[in-house]
Image 1 (cartoon, rainbow, N blue to C red):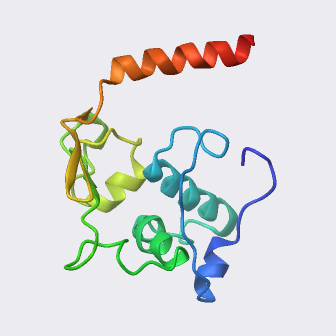
Image 2 (tube, rainbow, N blue to C red):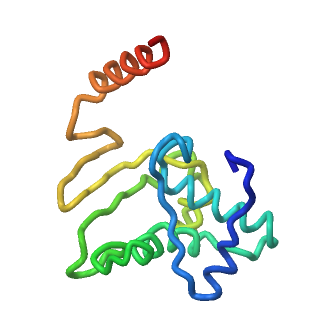
Length: 155
């Protein structure tokens, strides 16, 4: 959408058995680095192109998890199961942005506004708890990031 180069034929590819995954890799290709936002966008684009039944929230989430693993030819990621990498995130469905949507948590995650992660565990290590990073001092990193961006822009 940013490039205005069209809508990927995700539904057709998926129907034909072509591996399809979603990912985020930086501000050059997405606005927030939020995989659920990208899953939502992919689902909405398919619905615009092919009608409201073109893609469900569950299919969009599957493309973002199992689909990404399949595209990478990885059988150790993409689902929570014994023997797989224990990387996962959790969201607080009691947050105001999810009000009225708790009856279907998957639809809530994909259809509601992208929420901040309540808990993130990567390779068995808690990296975010209660929406806050546990692995670094965020204000210090943000100050450094803003300083470097200013230097880049101003030469």
